[in-house]
Image 1 (cartoon, helix red, strand yellow):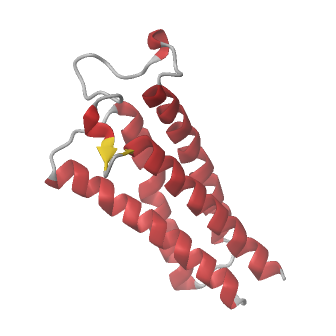
Image 2: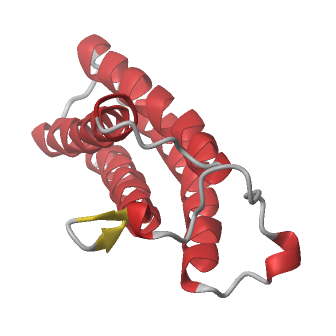
Length: 141
């Protein structure tokens, strides 16, 4: 059971970030019609479960759910970091996972309010990981 108010607040904040990120990419894909690239799909594979797992942890008042938040966020963050390297041109062309026939990781469609989607994803995963870790720290104190 989550015993400290700070731990529960950190977990609620992590869940909120994961939920907003999940709903945002669904809006971009389903409403705006922007098809995700391969790396976006991999990031979604980490973000969507975060919204569910952290939400259930809050519902059940499970203080240990932050562990799963950290693990999933680190995995998704690694993919987002790679994606950001690709967007910034730091990843050499021969090892880019996107094909010429599919959606591109480097075109102007990758911007939301002038910020690259890979960077937004990286920030979201970093926030979820940090808040999940904080939720664990707060429950131990």
